[in-house]
Image (cartoon, rainbow, N blue to C red; front, top):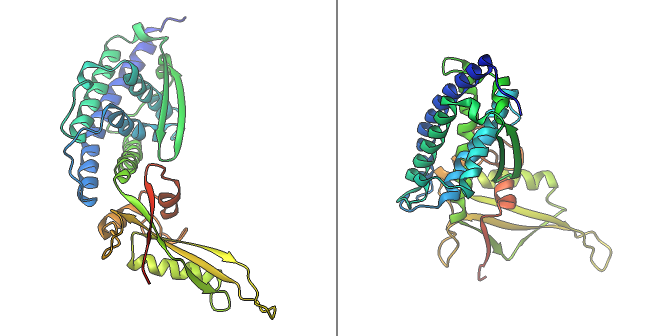
Length: 307
């Protein structure tokens, strides 16, 4: 157990003042991202998605600083995520009620985090040796983080006037955007269309399959095509190998007269690439392959067309 010096206390107080400014601005920017996501996905924000979702949105934002931009962002990420993780088992009264929208849930969670930052800022010495442990699960997996309160005396978190403050903000804002889209995409399904289509290797190379896919996505923006090489010879020994292709679509689900595709504006915002590494929006949120294959919260189904 160690006691802080007066200088260390001043450093921590200054850091918390800047962290409070950061959290308040992240809330404002986060609100904009939430509104935008519901609008583009044609969803209505009219129900509370629960305590854990509110925590996940903020944790998903802050964890982006862990290991980034040196130790300052890393320590702040661990403190913030540690507090948010603690809310799961020791839920503040402000978060126990049911809200009428995720936006209001997000607001209450952000305000509670600011309130705790203010409490720590008032009396750092009382918490000097407290340990902050965090578990953060997002679209990319689960991370565990840990630090000691006193670690805040070893860093300088930038004020709003410092350009690094905005670097942190843009990083966390993008991660928050990813988190809310990851959550809301769970309202949709990925449909695999049957039967598959065969493309003879005598007419189509792997490169042509990739080029065709990229061109197809430019028109059918909610799709991802999966194909595999099938080696085959006929009775005369002639190579009749082919690529077997299945089309997949994210949206509301296919029916007799619709593929239920996600609207183009949402796809333009969501996808970074068309085919792998063919960038169509460098500010997009996820790679197309990742959405269709790695987002475990999205249900998968099949739809067979009658020929």
